[in-house]
Image (cartoon, rainbow, N blue to C red; front, side, top):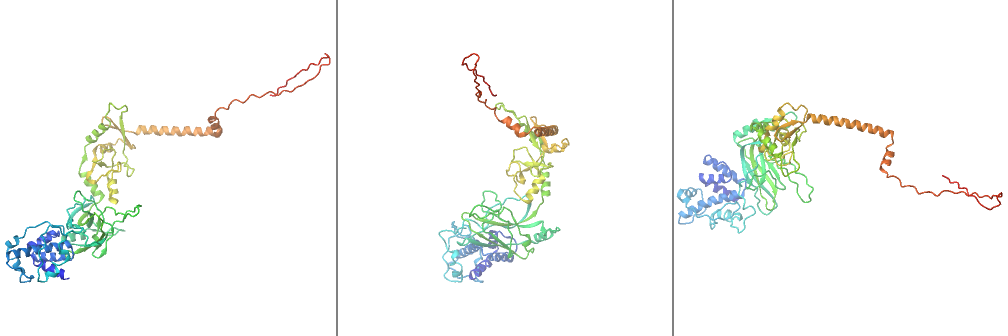
Length: 508
């Protein structure tokens, strides 16, 4: 409590220039009278942000140092009477000691600590505070500033109207794994009016706002644009109420916490639509080794898929000659290749809805000829934003979408009737496949009648017997049987001889 009062006294002793420096450091509005600047600065103390407190101490120490440089004796604890004398000369303020780069929890360079005063209230409340002592090893969050230079990816279905809270670091304090931080943002009178007048009440649905207050989380990485990313174990409260977050995506990996889908959070229904009342956001999360996160709050306007389609059409159409040249390139004859491709078939059905396309489009990063319907693609991403090409499964963001003028001419030609495929030729022209499809249908009907006749024949001649005869090899020749011999012996008494006659009867 004593430290908070000391910090407040420091803030109240600042001039307009120091107040503007402090508010600019915290990303707040720096315009207005001195009393307004002091009120905003005191409001910062309620956040209990260590970097902000260190900035207040740094500014006061600079003033104190300038005062001791111009005076021959060290002053005692500041009082209401002595505070104006600290700022009595602007020249004294400029005579500050040279700065040396020393890390501190705020992530900025500051002067080395001065010997603490031996008297006064600040001797025990500020200069002897543990967070103010010079440390040989900086805390975990020392390398991250209060407002990191990160840029979040633009969301196609939202127009950015204003920045309510600049990207702010979720800076852990202490060595505990579960951390908590607080943030404050305000609405201007115009912003509060715009949000309140954009309410839409649809039958059977909850109240929706066209102009929304949107909260986003991302990794602190300034090398490229960042998509929405949530820290582990995150929980958010807005003005004391629990804020619903996107449901985590289930995972089968053991020991791995499910990740939340990269989507922003709409907190409009939890925001106080008053320019005089601040909005408080409390975030708790689990610290991850080697990762740091930031939170930002924006004022946006939600767009529909039909509005995006209209914007896509306003960009214009890709010239048909571009696609015609691509067709010639794909069908170009290769001398070294023995097999030459003379034509290509392209479907006029959208791979998403299996319906005839009305607005054929594709991404400029795709090299295939097949298109998809722009309206269906935008409606799908409005419900579940993936922005992946349904043909090649590569990223196809809205900024890269373009309407193909060649296939738009094909669809608008009026020569297709019931044809759902076209054939592309080497010279870049096209022709429908209606005749070939009719021939295919006639051939399929003939095949069906032929199958029916064959089935009838199978009924007359048993199928198993035919299969056996067809499949079995010819039987081997049967072994030659020995003839059966019946011996009939009789004697010829007339001749008086004993000759025997044999009669062979062969049984066949």
